[in-house]
Length: 130
Image 1 (cartoon, rainbow, N blue to C red):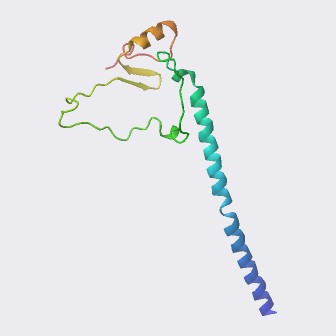
Image 2 (image 1 turned 90 degrees about the horizontal axis):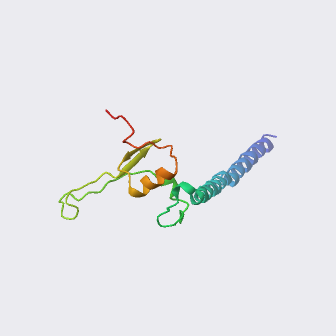
Image 3 (image 1 turned 30 degrees about the vertical axis):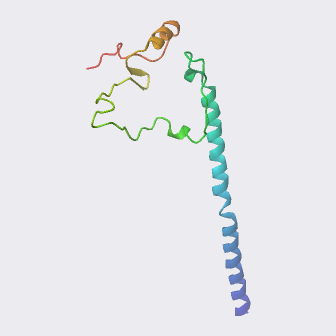
């Protein structure tokens, strides 16, 4: 009986190990598929976003890769020419938006657009920065 019980325990352990190895790949594969579907849907929503539409060029947003949307807004490096031979060491601040506040110069296109459409974004001229 000891040989039979050892055989049953050994068979159970081998079957349990086989079962775990067989099903361990299902969750990661389904997770990867789900993440790709989410990235694809985000790319569709970016393409539908009317606030990204460029009226000057009459050009909507064109998403060419669904994997780049998770990297939007992440600046890791700013390269500059230390010698000044190419840029004359001029780094000019253009514009930055944080929440509902916009900092920087207003372009001619933005000033004509803001007179036609009310905006939730306040320019830096309207803010009292101290």
